[in-house]
Structure formats: C-alpha cells, structure tokens
Image 1: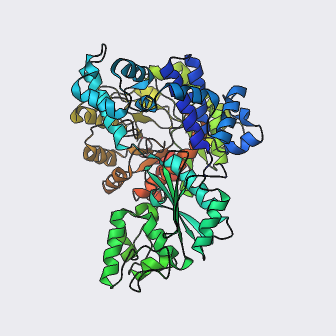
Image 2: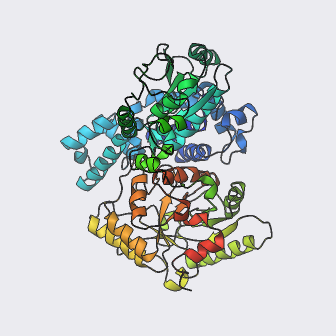
Image 3: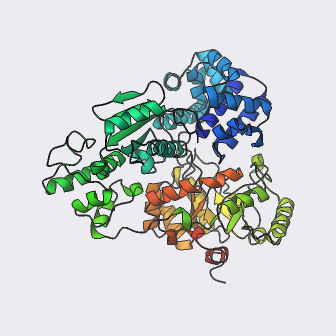
Length: 589
C-alpha cells in the first residue's frame, strides 16, 4: 500500500492499468498491447509488495511482465495518478463507453459498436436501448444475446458504486494505520462494511480515538492523509474524501471514553444496531447516543456510552461480543446473550489451498511458484487443479499431459526440500448431462477431484440442478467448485435448487467449495449458513491463476466467518494425510 491513502495503492494502480487495456481494445489498437496492460493489472492487483515503494527504488521491472515502458507508466501513476497514454485515450473515449465493458456480454468491441452505431454512452443508455429494442436491430445481435446482455446490465447495476472487499480492505487498513501513527491520536480502527467483511463495499469507514478531537482533525489535515478536497465536518469531528479506488472514505473521531460505542455504531449493520437500540431501550438508555457518540460530554445522560465494545455489550446484558462479521442480525445477539457464540474459522486454521491452476492450462504461475508461495504462507500443502480435457478453450489436459504433470509432482514432492506437498487434483467440467471428464480409471488416480459448472446460465433450474446433482453422486467427485457460478457485478448465480444440492452433498459426503477468489466468494455467507444447517462440509480454495492469488485465502476465511463456519467444518484445516483420508473416495477403505 501507498503510505498516503490519498495517493495511489496497488488496487488503484491495477484499476488504471485495466482501464488502459479496455481503452486500447475499444480504440481497436494492437491486441498484444492491450494484453500486456491487462496482464500487468492482474500481476499488480495481487502483488504482495507496495508498488509505491518499488517505484521509489526503481524495482518495478521485477514484476513479471512489466518492462521498462510499463514500469514508467506505473511510476507516473504512483506520482501523478495517471500517465500520458492513458490521458490521451480518456480524452478520446467517453467514460460511459468504458463503463459498458464492465457489463457481462458486452466487451470492448460491442461497446465501441454500441457507441458508434447507436450513440450508447452509458450503462443506463444501454438499458434503455435494450428496453426499446434498438440493440436487437443491430446486425448479429439476436433476442437471446440481448437477453444475456440485459442480465449483465442488471448484475452491473446491482453493484454500481461499490468495490470488491479485496480493494477496500487494504485501503481501510492503511488509512487506520496512518491515522494511528499521529501523535494526536490514541488509536484507530477499521469499521463499517469493511470490518463486517461484506463482499462489496461502497464506503470505507475508520474510527479514531483522540483526547482532543479538534487537534486530531487538524493533524490529519496537516499530514495530507485525506488529500485536497476533503469534506471536513468540525461539529461532528469527522471528515470524508474520495479515494483512488472510486469510493468515499470517512474518518470519525471520538473521545476514548466513547470509543466502544462509536466503533459499534460505525460498524453496523443497521439490523444489528436496531437490536442493540431495542436492548438499550429496555434499560432506559439510548443507543446510538443522541446526536452521535463523537463527543463524550455532548450526549445526554441517558446515552449508552462505553470505552470498549466489551463494556458496551456487557451493559446490554450480553455475555460475549459478537464478531464483526456476524453483525447482521442472523442470531448473533441470541448467541452472545447465551454465551454460545462459536469459535469461527481463523486464517491460522488453514493448512493448505485446494484450488490452484498453473501454466499447464490457463494460469500464469508454475507448480514451483505456487509451491513457493504456499511455503511463504506456512502451508503444509497446495493442490494443483488445472482444467480437465473437456474445457479445451483453456487448454484442458489430456491423459498424456496429466501423466507428465503427475511425474513432475512426484519429482517435486521427493526433492527433500521440506517445501509444502503438492496434491494431485483436477478441476473437471460438468457436462450437459452431469458427466465429467475422463474415465473412472483416470479419476481414481487423482488425490481428489473438483467438478465445476462452467455453463448453464440459460438453462432451467431443473436442468442445471440435475447436472450438479449427477456430479455430486459421482464417487470420484470430492468437491463441487464455485457452486453457484456467480461473479460479483458481472454474473448472477445459476438458477439452482440449492436445498436439493445441500441435501445431496451432505448425504454423499461431497464437499462444497467456498471459492475465495474476490469476485466470486462462492458460496456466499447466506448460502454457507444454509449449507451448514444441512450438514455440509466445505473446502476453501483460491482458484489461483497466479501464485499471488494464493493470498486471496484471506477473503475466503472472512466470508466463511460471515457464514458462521467453524474450523471443523472446513476440510483444509486438516493435515494432508488426514485430509485425503476424510475424502468420500477414501473413507470406506
């Protein structure tokens, strides 16, 4: 992360590089040029080191795929928030046309065509053109294509104005860290949707405690943390400002005597706070404090004020403090009152990653690179789960290629390095009748198999559910990958009968994946909770296509916590031998 939040961090740099790739494609520029920017955006987004520091030290070319020209563009981004080639293209192409690229089913070439032939210059204009039939009057776009684009528009608009948790969390943490370092500030904490680990976030909130809130506010201004143009509300001891990732950040200052009250209020959710307010009213108190909790002496004597959340929840008659991820009024109040809150999954419980791809199919990292990252994360194992033969569009592996990969895995596992063990997995494609790739004698040779749906968004719920149930019943399918198929902001979930899926998975011992890739987080927290009630167990995998993507496990764990998932319900909290023994293919042996 950049040390100044008003500056540009890795997520924002990746966003601008991806924008450049989109602009190049819309303009019809050389395809390889746009690919280089898109590849760099992928590397940067998951790069573990702050690019601002690398730029200052002249080390940007250490990033794979970043040559001198790209390094110069990134350095300009760090210093100025833009670079000349990007400015030139943004002057030529309206921002709304670029926005169209984010709609599933559109893409750069259609965005250009919609603009040039129909004058469509925004997602709202596209929605109107779909409604009045203008889009289908273009050659080559029939009713089914228009319907698919319409679904993409709905998914896009549902998340407009928000960003992925992956983009918001590092920025929020950096902001809290910078503010906490100021002499005038006692402590600072991430709050809001980020603290609750919501899958998408429309605002970053930080709560800071300071004995003199006015002095702290002035110190934040002097430090330039919020940058120029910040909106300062001295009466509320708060400020807000635009961030490089396109959402607003808000800093709320309070006296340390009311930190617990302020932090709880700023964390939410609305439903959780309403329950707290009702509990406070039962005791003749007011929560949130009248006029807000920013000033310890400004609220009425009836206001519920506490220096810590432990104190606050205790005053409300609760034996425990609900973890922030659970504060959605889904039973956490009752469990906290009874002292029965579960120990939720934690990052340190994870022993390995069960979904990672390599350069053998459509990824950008080798077995060795994935293994090295797994070692850095302290894992005992990492799986290789490249795509199977039927998915030829991503170079799915035939049996000859599998034999070569298995031989390489065997060689690495026997090298005496002490590095994490590589498990032989595969991501099978679930076909039209629920069939999966390879005959049984090949499937039996894997350590485990993931099976995933990669199509079916136009099928009925009955048909797509039947396909998934057939895979669940297959004795060699151990895990169902990204079960609903959703992509946040781009694709709605498959029309599945999830109750039937959960029942079958629990009955057969088939694990359901929590795909930790930040724009999937599939299963969602709500689906995880329902699956748990049905007796389902889970595997968490990052679906890594670069070694750096293994770091996305953090978002899978946070989502699991939102779904009330315990360590014992996740198979990759086990060591490698225990894990393999627990799979349904091995339990009866």
